[in-house]
Amino acid sequence: MFLIGLTGSIGMGKSATGRMFAARGVPVHDADAEVHRLYENEAVAPLKEAFPGAIVDGRVDRVRLSQAVLGDDRAMKHLESIVHPLVRAGEKAFLDKAFSQGRMAAAVEVPLLLEVSGDARVDAVVLASAPAEVQRDRVLKRGGMSTEKFEQILARQIPDAEKRRRSHFVVDTSRGFAFAEKQVDDILRALAGCQGTAYARRNQA
Image (tube, rainbow, N blue to C red):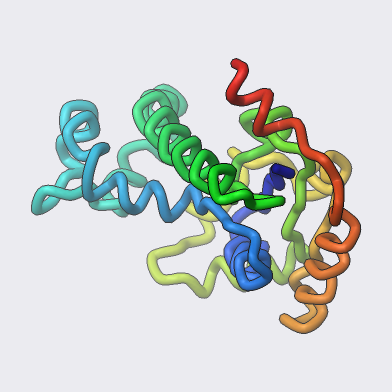
């Protein structure tokens, strides 16, 4: 099974690109969606112990949690030490299911794939990207987003130019859905018949 690592900085269109792969029959594990699920389930108890003020009505309040960790490297690392293993467990179960179904390819959608050296765990990296001004405009239109928060998030992410250099494929999401979809189709044609080794390596580790 060929394993695609789909990534992209905030506001770059990563989730929309993931939906395009899914629409073409490639199962996609969305790390952000997994975190949302965990924040109402398995992650609640350990996060309540670590960040008690971030738990509201038995679930993690993402705004309060963000306020507790942004700008605090130690708190952020503690958060990651709790959440990342849970996300990885969900990802493994997802990929095991895709493999058992005989899927020829699967994708993991991970915002910080390159930041955590996740490119070593996939067969090819696909980057969703757009010009900086497009990214900024998209992000600042989001509810609860401020320029300060945006800059803090960017500070934790590798610059897009470096991500482009380290990726096998780039999907430009700034020119409309039809253009992005053609790029996704081109990527899948390029990968057709390719034999992946990343899934096997994961299961040997």
